[in-house]
Length: 82
Image 1 (cartoon, rainbow, N blue to C red):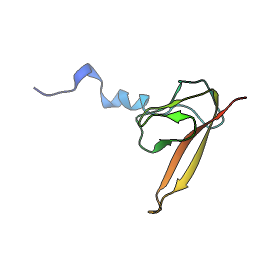
Image 2 (image 1 turned 90 degrees about the vertical axis):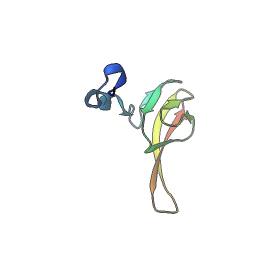
Image 3 (image 1 turned 120 degrees about the vertical axis):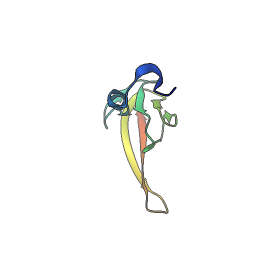
Image 4 (image 1 turned 60 degrees about the vertical axis):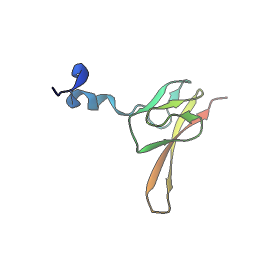
């Protein structure tokens, strides 16, 4: 017997994945920033591996860095609100 467990199809599941906030947007601590994406890495005040969460209240901003192999990595950061 094969098949998918839970009845979720990839047609509808794709809609829930990806980036959930945009740059400059205010977020509260614990809010979800991304879901299931390897293209974003946690930066300052962000935790997680595939699901990134904010550690503090503040504004979201993105930074990009280039590795030794010329691969571009995008980091998701949160600037704390004072």
